[in-house]
Amino acid sequence: MQTILEAQTDKKKPFKLYAIIVATAVILLPWLANSFFLNSTNSDASISAEGLNIATVKSGNLIRDVRAPGNLIAKNRQWLSARVSAKVIKRVLEPGAVVTPDSIILQLSSPELTQQYKVVQIDFKVAQAQLEALQEVQITEMQKKHADVKLLEVEKQQAIEDAAAKKQLRVTKIIPLYQYSEAVLREKKLTLQLEIAEFELKQLPRLQASLLKVEQARVEQQLLQVSLLSEQVALLEVRAQMHGILQSISVEEGQEISQGTELARVADQKSLKAELRVQESQAKDIKIGQIVEIDTRRSKISGVVSRIDPAVVNGTVTVDVELSKDLPSEVRPDLRVNGIIEIQRLDNVLLLDKPASWQQTKTAYLFKLTSDSQAVKTKVVIGAISTKSIQLLSGLTKGEQVILSDTSHLLQHQEIAIN
Image 1 (tube, one colour):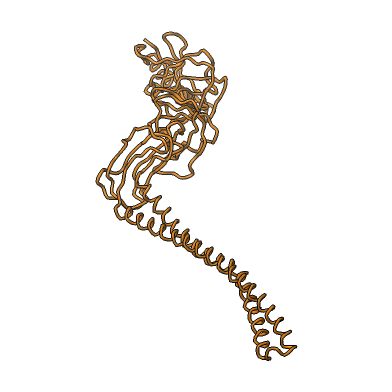
Image 2 (cartoon, helix red, strand yellow):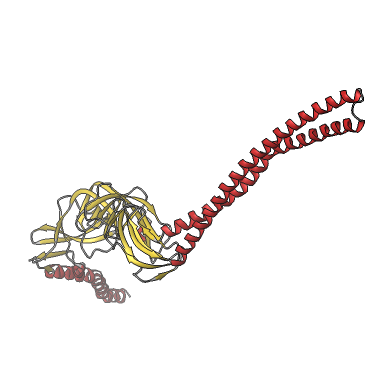
């Protein structure tokens, strides 16, 4: 019995040994294969040093900015439009001319308006003459009324004296009663006439003033018509109305225009602002008061954000920039410019030059140089990004060098050779 058990145990030993060998192979083969593959790839990975873009990690200030195209716009500008229907007879000035408020840009013609103006001028003169005549008549009437009152006063006094005399004569019965009665009635009559004349004299100034106001109102009405038409006739000479430069003229000689037609545009080229068209996705970081640099392609002008349009037009937001007072000579309204809006400034941080093909990301793998001929793959954490630089939060230190050329095809290698 014991012999049988020993025989079975001897048969199981080779099986256990075989199982251990297989298990060990299963565990070690992937590690050996991976090590062999890595050693093989590491030893085979290389990149040419010719044209290789290598950057050094440095410390400095990072400025996040937004770049946008735009135009210079005059803050003070005037759109000149036709105030009357007329015909353009002459373009006195052409775009580009320096103008003052009294500079004549266009001459218009309207025979109907001119004729109407002459008619109201005549009507005004007639009304004015009638007013003067009324004033003379009222003076004469006032003098006549004063004379009438004085005459009645004299006649009344005579009637009083006559009635007194006849009263004495009647007492002595020299004259009949009717003569005395006539004298008394005449006195009463003249007394009443004098009272009426004095009342009329007292009321006459008020009556004359009322009549005078009516005639004066008529004269003022005619004068207003003359003034309105005089202004319209004056508008046949289209003036600049401000100091600046004539930007454009919208009409040609001989053209018939109606009221409201745009004629010309004048702008003050000494008072300019910049209007930048910022992409909607970038506008969220822009705030009033941020510093802006305006590039005219010949000069750079400093400014600050003064207004952000709340509306989005064709995917862009309009941002107004207040410019410094000292402007270069080449600036003019509608000049195309480029603006750089500073939205964030980070002082004394680790920086790396931004490659042209850089993609927005929080982490990245770069090859750090360990020697002139060797580089190792290194994970870096990215912070803020500007148009020129990348902020490094971790992974690299100041003075270390990395390859910025495209190495995406080598990222499966831990190390690469530079030759």
